[in-house]
Length: 323
Image 1 (cartoon, one colour):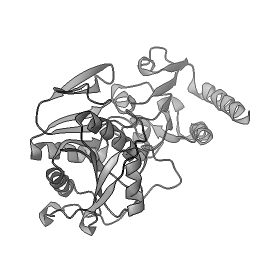
Image 2 (cartoon, rainbow, N blue to C red):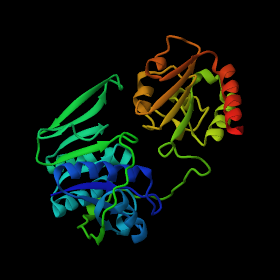
Image 3 (cartoon, rainbow, N blue to C red):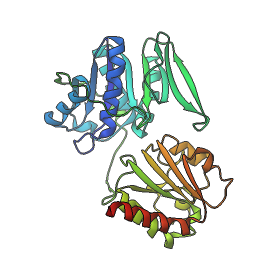
Image 4 (cartoon, rainbow, N blue to C red):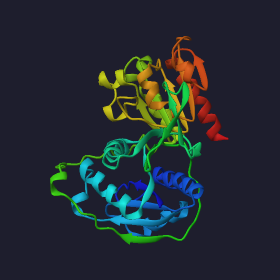
């Protein structure tokens, strides 16, 4: 029996997201009296794979096959299922991101396993197996009971944290059977955004909405983000209007993020937007409407014209950084 973690790498390197998943899995494994097995698909060096032992991975199954260079939902699901069988995994853990949301439901059907998505903490109990998650756009917490022998969890980013729990790790080459008919993804070109902090990696995010009035006023957003080392984001109406690129759109229909600090500047707080940022540790909102829904979710709020408040906020940050 083991706890299996599906890990992602970016150009052969792991990020905080992966370390958080391993840390989370290690806590569950300790309670179950078992160990953590990490599954890595892609061209990753042994040196980078070995880093996972710092956070509690006792074994790493490494799959390196050029056929699996790009994410293919069906093929990757098959690989994970074979790893589950090989390691007799009882609990399988994914990130609650695009890859996790693509693979976990398919794996759930294939294994006949219960699935809890968007977990925010380790299980409340192991018998019965109960997972806590946010519901009703984070207005409440719900408990999900999984009764099947195998259990699948997707973990919200920044919900658990990164904890170092060093163990001795073995790296094992894994050669799963690959069905050519499942390789349906054909990537012909890759265009990567450069010179920006990725929203999914950002600890701090500065986001703007229609209250910014137009793209010509976005300089303040970018200046504040630069001062804080933050990523920039926007609400859906902003990206729909073409004020900002679609890769900055956050919300249920955009990127789901959970930074430590989220600035919502001129954003009213529609339920779809809050659903994508509600995992943020702290939300700071600026809006001229005191009844804007964003204030219900915000930890700190300023009622005022964002175009007047933002320059003052930038000035105060500059003063603090100069000290």
